[in-house]
Amino acid sequence: MNVMLASGKTIAIDEKFNDFSLALQVPIKDPKVIEELNKRRDAFVEANSNYGQIGEDSSRYHITIQLFFPKCTEIGSIIKLYNSMVMEIDDLKLTEHCQSLGTRGQFPVSIVESEQLRKLHEEFQKKLTIQSIKYQKFNDFTPHVSLFAVSVHALIPPQTMSCTSIKFRGETELSHKNNEAIFSVLAEKDLLELKNKTIQSTSVEQNSTIQGISMMVLGGFITVLGIATVAIAFVALNAPTLGMMAGLGSTVVGIGFFAAGTHLLCKKNHLSRHEVSLQQNPNL
Image (cartoon, rainbow, N blue to C red; front, side, top):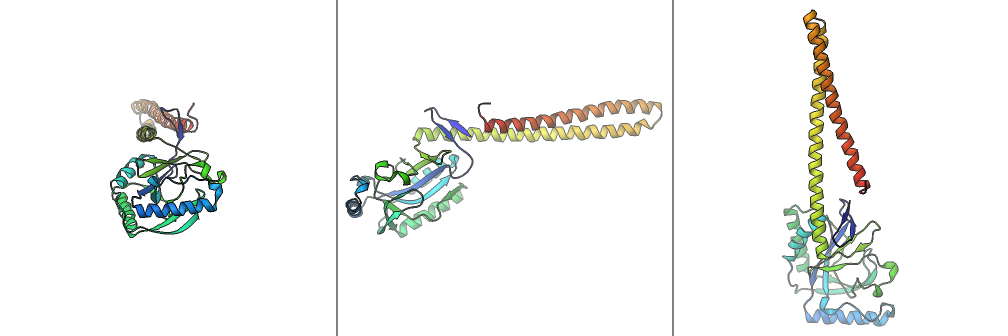
């Protein structure tokens, strides 16, 4: 399904979970931790001149806990729930550097260990289940702190760059994947408009399904009624003259019912094929 936004951007969306990625984050406020991260970043820059001199702004350091892949209609609920749970972490431990992280490319990160973070993540997932919010997550994801801003293309080798994210509502990053599997930036107003249009589309689809089922039931009923009437007519035709006249009349009525029922079923099938054509080619 293609959705045209007011900004002129066209977003292609299906009902899979991998159209959007949502990164859960916790801001780092501890001056000692920030100082340690700056040292690690500067040391990496000195040893790897191809990354340039600009790293992650120390005022924007954050821990990325997990990557979620929600459906469009669930994004707002997940963000609202997560933002209500963000807490300060005071048992943070930074461990080894990591040069490669998933499929997003190679860039330096510091792996994070924290019992409080683990409990926060578990509690968040429990609340998602209680609220019946559907999602998928990155099972092998490791909590970490990026030492470089991933969205700055100059700092990352072009051949490894596959995702551009934005900071969304202060505590999450949201990305959208298009048909070419490239992630693009979505502003908050774009997301809200996209969410509303997706909900409207889902509502129309549900109404169409209900109408289709009703038409099928009605058509089937009339068809069966027509067959039954024709059967009665054949019985009546074997009776004396008056029965023969009634039988002929019943035959005509029965054939009429059968034709009407068949017409409704054919109309329903035609509408179904037309809906599929519109989904495949919105310009029809």
